[in-house]
Image (cartoon, rainbow, N blue to C red; front, side, top):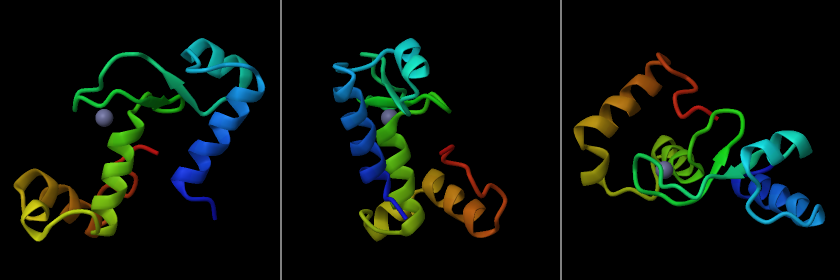
Length: 101
Ligand SMILES: [Zn+2]
């Protein structure tokens, strides 16, 4: 199974093959890319690619994945209310796909 990182790298390769750097959403849809570039920061201040499918920031998605897997975060961070609530929801299976990917 491809990791999220490999998945992203493959899409960037594909964009390069088309001679495109930082595809707009229109280009991404036209050429079938999975990621596009807005040039704007997300709600959490990340300036990176977004998913065509969900319009979500790639970094937010990666962070959510790390939280889900319980690594990359200290115990203290994991115990923060908002994050903890998300994890509890996940454990209970309330929102199996809450990170939107
Ligand atoms: Zn973000």
